[in-house]
Amino acid sequence: MSVGAGVDLEALAARVVANARPGEQVETYVVRSRETEVKVFGGHVESVSVAGVQGAGIRVIIGGCQGYAWAGSLDADVVLETLAEARDNAGFGTPDEHIGLATREEAASVGAVEGLDLWRDDLASITTEAKVALALDLERRALGLDTRVRGVESAEYGDSMVESAIANSLGLASAARRTTASCSVVTMAGEGSETRTAYGFSAGRTFGDLDPDQAARDAVERTVRILGGRKVPSAKLPVIVDPLVCTSLLGLYGAALNGEGIIKGRSMFAGRDGERVGGDAITLVDDPTEPRAFGASPFDSEGIPTRRTPLIVDGMLRGFLHNVYTGRRSGAGTTGSAVRGFKSAPGVGARALRLTPGNRTLAELMSDAGEALYVQSVSGLHSGTNIVSGDFSVGAVGLMIRDGVLAEPVREVTIASTLQRILLDLTVGSDEVWLPGSAVGVPLLVGEMALSGS
Image 1 (cartoon, helix red, strand yellow):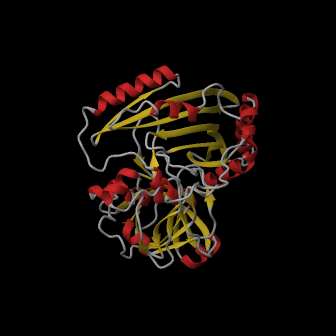
Image 2 (image 1 turned 90 degrees about the horizontal axis):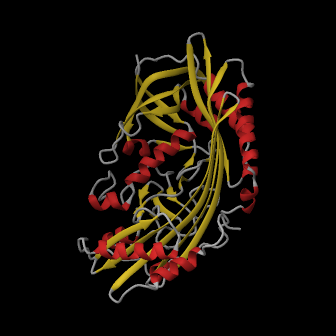
């Protein structure tokens, strides 16, 4: 089942590239999606959006110069006009010997992923009424779990069904599709004049995968346990990072391992390939072939098969993420890590960053840590971090850990270290959380960080 009738995406992409002229390379990337978003508040529907998005992006390369153009339509005549625009734009490009489209040889160097099933037909048959009912039920559940819950800041349901196809004039063609669904709630709880908020979610490939009860319970638990939070004295102490915070931290490492930044020298890892950058037990991979990852895909955005890409292995820096351009320029070759929307040419990005889990549960990590800080959420992540220098200083909300259990809540503190030092002093927990986005969450124990409080 498709998200829209009529246009055969693979046939359209192939038709466009068949118009390539001698001496030029042409690539067509076409996408069709349907997305639903429901927001409720105070027992009423605040908004419902059911939107279809479709479009085509076309690259033309002539003499090492690249032109790009896109159209928000799959009409064949419109897409062919877009090809003409991309061809004209190539005349304004700057020649670069490394610019070129993916070849069949590059694609064949890694076999296509077999059996990666990311699509659920039944999502298309779920009514909008059922999706609204789930969001309203989620809000009701959250409000009824604890008398300290004063309200729900937001309760939402969302899903997407996305299909894409790529073809180029060098003979490469591929297609991919995926579905995702999620629900989330932000609860407000308080005592006296104090009010705090926290988040809970559930996600899956289709409507039936969702657990609104668990989402509500997680949000309420995370909200009420930080009530009464205060500053604590400044200190150096171990820090345990919540799985939701872990995904943000992995996003920083993923950005630092991006081939575009490495080529430009804008990464703390530039020039360090083969060096030790983490503890012996630290292995970080990007694995879009893992079906549990919400960023999974059989092909990247240039039509290259995805693969498991080791980045850090047993603490040693072993590689970077590359698309065709950065792979050629660096000499390392593509890792199938091209990412894009139809409105832009391919960039480089992670799809499913994952630290190899350790053998210690969260409870065991807390027992190991002694007196420590559990970080439930952070603020200022982008302003307080630098992937070139490795500086890391962010606001934190959480709880102290004493005698192996969560103790008094903490807020208005800052935790600081460097991204390099964190990797060298890191213990990875065993409790993975599969989250929407490009990283897998897991509790982390950092041996020591600077806490700035009162």
